[in-house]
Length: 526
Image (cartoon, rainbow, N blue to C red; front, top):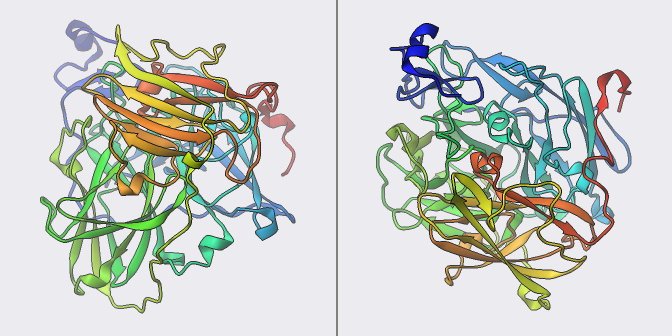
């Protein structure tokens, strides 16, 4: 919705810098969010959700999606739409892997109590557990709505260990719903990984990175720049703006998730807040689909960690190399395709090394074997072009149509997909549902070392072709038939409508009608 200056005067908005966003939220055209001191607020992690009950094979969880007023900026209240009323939502930590090795499945009940949006429309929910090999009816298909005053029980197999996340996936409104708070981390561990001498317990820490823009009264501003991108000027880690975390002089494992709507990050450590220092190390041990084959050491200033929207990387930071009293900053040095309106977005958080503690953790090498899919016979190759044309976000010249299937691989097929970005000005973090994949090349060059594990999101930069390979079967060898989505995970692009679908095999469960949401009035205890 656009309004003229004359209409703004009538509404009393002229001279305030406030416009109405396309979704009815107040938007600020040029003003920055309220300026607050950085690194003053204490780092915190979302609570770990406990199951409401468990049986021999399954843990049962319950999450209510609802509105809440929370303090994000000091002294101001912000309305969020959160899982259990918090943003990010509670963390689910689950033991997964083979059933013969104590792997467990989950049933997660999501209850929608969101009511209406500012325009009086019902706020539907769709829950996608990003990275999970779910059946179609539990994958979070874009029109498999959970309306207000309804619930749905999602079944998750937890087939392999990885850092996953759950988030909203409603057709056309995913960017709004995720921006308002509907995201959370889901961690699957298995016996193999738990037996490794990596940092554990309180030294295994989620870092959910997002950005936001706020009005002077604390409200979130939704402005997608005419359906292009949404960039905030306040960096949030686990919902806290520019936090400071007190750490011991030992190794920590950080599970990094980029849960922003559009912003991509280029991460590095530094002993200075405003510039990089030489010789700081991040050691990458895992990507989207779990542990890498070998740890990858990145040392500033020449090596940094690119994290596109929805990508996950687990890193080890060894604070024993810093004396007690040191301050170490996690910096974002910028990423092609991002527009940093405020230099404050170039620094994310601060670590304060404040105490000595023993450390019996180590970083094994190798970590976990990564079976190369290139050793399998290739069934076929497909090409998908992600581009903007006539003010539309398109894949192979087409926008999203739930009635159209653009690829039909058969069970067990191994395919190579070329993901092509033929233009400039935009990058596309492409997410393929259901399957874990491996990157083969970027513009004919080898993937970066930390991109050589299992992945489900591929950053396709300007004028780039990313070549990836996948098998349409789970890594446990299970076959799943049905329709699944592929889309750009810049959520503004996804909403307008850079998304398509593929169908594995024939005769799979319908993602919308097989397990539809039910009214809360019919809900029985889990």
